[in-house]
Length: 396
Image (cartoon, rainbow, N blue to C red; front, side, top):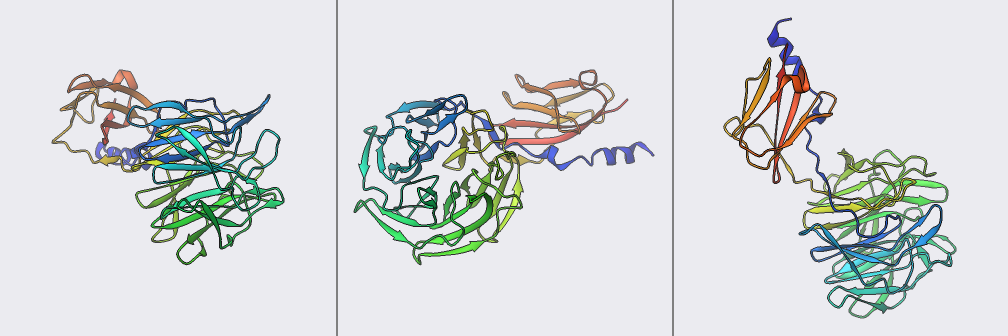
């Protein structure tokens, strides 16, 4: 086989090596590691709090922490007005958040709801949730009103839903959810429609998925969320596409780190890149702008790591007028020129492992064969939100 044919086959590398990682590690959650926490967004800030740990001892929390993406920092805010609680339900309307329900230290469920004003840093009680007390309910906001339903109630799993109006401080019962009653389902909103799916019911994890239109008070079943039965997952909407990922199977023996993306137009799910942190259940998430933020949860160990996800980060095809790589193939070294300062260079082998990386302090750099060996390599050069990718080869 001549050299050209060899090089042709060497360049047929796995496509995943060309993928850019849209997950980025951020500052750890400001409070203790925990799971069954709650999260919400107000304006350009995100909030996580509540939850518990139940390993060597049972600790329940009432603290609330504010995340500022501009500074990548956490600030503790006023404790939740209802006290110690986990598996609460939260939603935001305009410049305030609403949170309630959940399980208390007496091991019973609650039905109170509270409003949080971030300017005064104060929690105010509102009208109690009209349904049965419960934990693990789903909540979302559409057109200035909050919606809460499902969950594990005192009498069992629930399928009722209620609408909250902040103007009248009152709740109105809506159409019951048409799927099986459940707890720990994922919910999100797109184009004034809500989407709810996955979760846990009597000894069964679920993958079904439904659309709710408040204007017609009507539920419709949509395509299942992938092939895996899934509970205790998280989800969000970015750029008019839905995402659901992580969670675990029905007995908790398998924790997931995969993510699926949903097209509202075609009613189809497809796999996207995995979450970059450890597989887990009970991770929470919120969205600010075009970026999702996810963290906490458990896989047997309670976690406090925190990540951002931005699918708009671009992969820019290699442009030799901008970046020069030579000689390629090479028998001794490869030079990179016309680089941007402070870009990050990563080199991957054919197994997807990083074999070389550096932050570029000048407009050119070089990699020698004796540093990484003979082989075909993929490089990534990342600057701001743009990444250039390409291949180079060291031969004998």
